[in-house]
Length: 276
Ligand SMILES: [Zn+2]
Image 1 (tube, rainbow, N blue to C red):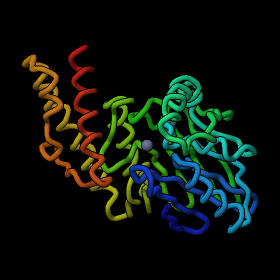
Image 2 (image 1 turned 90 degrees about the horizontal axis):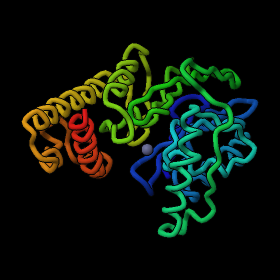
Image 3 (image 1 turned 180 degrees about the vertical axis):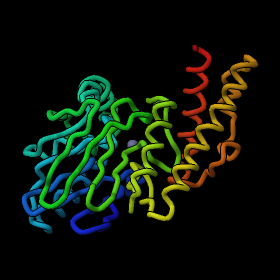
């Protein structure tokens, strides 16, 4: 796991075990809030040790940006923290999440100790504000990657933890392309110092607008290509064969994992447009 301090009392942790997934910590005088927890207990424990032992804080709040296991597996390691998420994250973790964990466990012994722990403080449409020391955390609904996706804005520092709404490649297989476009369009007007993506490198001030534009361009180009196939009643395999470069993205981000994400996007969008 890599650890980076990006501002006073704000830390980002990046997994070295799975797809550069990120987690964050906001550490105030009266306790800490975590934003996601990384998928594997060995790395979650490093976050816990760092916040509790090294910084001498205690985790009071744990925010789930969405229900996917690479972001929520660590919930159970903070039994005293209040878990916060979108109400749909609670529902999905309780059903799809439980099933996925039961399926993954036999193949991954490192997940033996992971238990599903559900959010108890729930967000719906409007924002939820959390005050921690001198920091204000603003949680708001940013669907697209999934219907339950939340982002967390650290208002004083102008840092956005965007969850998987912002990634080196947008991923809409479990979500919706129009929601994702709407959510991405919320980023630039916030005039941010940093965007912490759900996976991959932190996006710095001067790069944010370009990164958002590139993601919007990708989605636009993907949609046009798939629409053309569906209109001509071309077979599904042709959607899978659309090269990532032809949609304006390269295949090296996230150590190549974006190629899989892109293939998933192509098929999911094909299925939705063909059904419509
Ligand atoms: Zn993820």
